[in-house]
Structures are given as structure tokens and as C-alpha cells.
Length: 107
Length: 128
Image 1 (cartoon, one colour):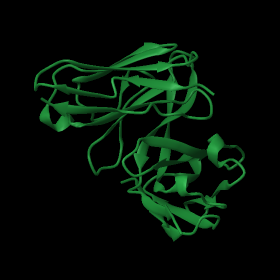
Image 2 (cartoon, rainbow over the protein chains, first blue to last red; image 1 turned 90 degrees about the horizontal axis):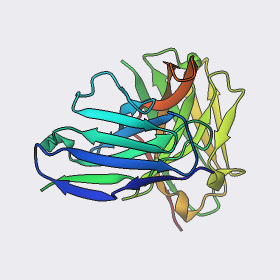
Image 3 (tube, chains in turn red, cyan; image 1 turned 180 degrees about the vertical axis):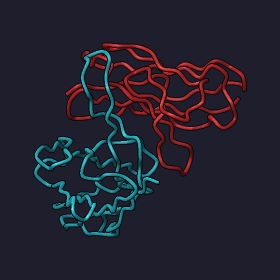
């Protein structure tokens, strides 16, 4: 099975900072990758699918890029409400594995 | 509005069975792939299973193969997860989730992938 590895596992940044989270697949998955945000105590929320397509209603400070094995989620200007765990997920074929998650905090 | 409401969670002894249900509303349930995703306490998300809209195709994570079964009743707008031979490591919140469909310009075809709606989850605790 294809493994999904996210880095870093956690980060602390200041409001207004540019934040980048990476997700690496152990084999190529084309662009079949999604990103989710899960705020503490809440249900996960879809941010991006097809590696770079922003889900309706998601703020434009979120963006995704990549194809093949290497993917990136970028928050262009970190806001206090962005404190959350972020997960990537592949869906090119079963199993639809998630990355282990990245916790984002405000410094 | 899309709603997914899980039920059936609770405390069960190791080795026991449990059946989760998910009642869907606000969308054409019979036209969507559906998934189950779980999250152990304090841990990350784990995809468990999914099922094609007509029930003819299903997939499971290796750790539950042979123990869990996914099914659906499109007439009742309901998704189910039958869990047998439960283990301590199955303790988690189980989410019912709708899979989104979109046109992928990369492959010039329709793609089922990513979860666009989640239920609130139901807690399954496996413990003696």
C-alpha cells in the first residue's frame, strides 16, 4: 500500500506568517490528493481536492500544489482561526490513506 | 442541507459485534459513494471503508478486512458498518462521510474522491 507522510508533525507560527505543510506519497498518485482541516473538537472539513482545487467556501489564503508524489498545502497569511490539525489523503485507489496530520499553532 | 447522522456506537467487549448506522438526508444518497472514517482518541484520521453508490463495489483498510462489512439501503437513505470481532484498537469515533464527485482535467474524466461532508461521529469503545 502507498504510504502518506506529512511534515512537519507540528508547527508554531505567528499571525500573518506564510505556512507550508508537505505531504509525500510513497508512490505516484497523480493529483488524487485532498487536504482537510480539523479544528479542536470539531469534524474535519475539506479544504482542497485534486491537489489544488479549493473547495467552495474555503478562504483563498489556502492553496494546494503538487502532483505525483510531492504535495504542499500553503496558508498564505496565518489567522488565529487556522489553529487546527491538517491532514492529506490520497484517493487514487484503495486504501484511501490519510497522512498522520500536522498540528498548527499560533506563536 | 446535507446531513449525516450516525448511531449505534457504545461500549462493547473485545470480540463482540456492533452495527453502526448512518442516516443521510438533503442529497441524492443513492447517487454517491460513501465512506466510513475513524479517529482513535487523540489520534489522526483513518479511512476504514467505502462503498459505491449502487453497492456493487466496496473497499476496506487492511486492519478491518474480514471483520467489518459495509452495506447500504438506498431506499432508506442509510449506510451501515457491521463490525465483528472487535479489538481494543478499534476504539474510535466513527464518521460517516460522503464522497465528492468531480471532473478531473488531469485525466479528462469524472473522479470519485475526497470527502465533502461528514457526520458528527459516533464513539465506539472496545473494552472489558
